[in-house]
Amino acid sequence: MATRIDLTLDCTDAKLLAEFWKTALGYVDEPPPAPFETREEWFAQFDLPEDDSVDDAQWLCDPDGTGPRLSLLKVPEPKTAKNRLHLDIRVPGHGSAAERWARIRAESERLVEAGGSVLARFDEHHIVMADPEGNEFCVAAAAN
Image (tube, rainbow, N blue to C red; front, side, top):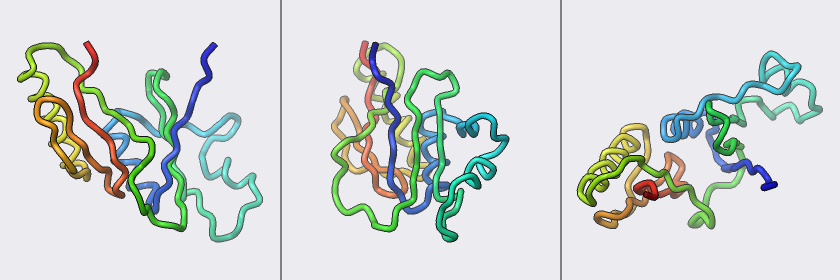
């Protein structure tokens, strides 16, 4: 049996990144663990420093339950270098290379409107982008 994984992104603004990644991935806010009704209730059980806030972290999940959970955690230090691991957002659909490239470009434009930025284009193959805090990811066609 394969091990399930979660992905975690360090950040300075967990709420901002959560909104971006919900748009990018179609994810939703993950409900708090049982028996808690809210994240605030769950968070209150821990003996954390006074300046820690439930807003310093966000948890997202695939509404279909198939993709990995995404945790966004506030850290004090800024991002200083290229990610060693990045996400590839795969745009579904078949067709010619031109049709696949048109879907990739359309998805990258949608993600720019959501707060992302284009870093590089590799025509007819993929687009390298960054989320609002500079975390790199790629937009490419789904494998056929």
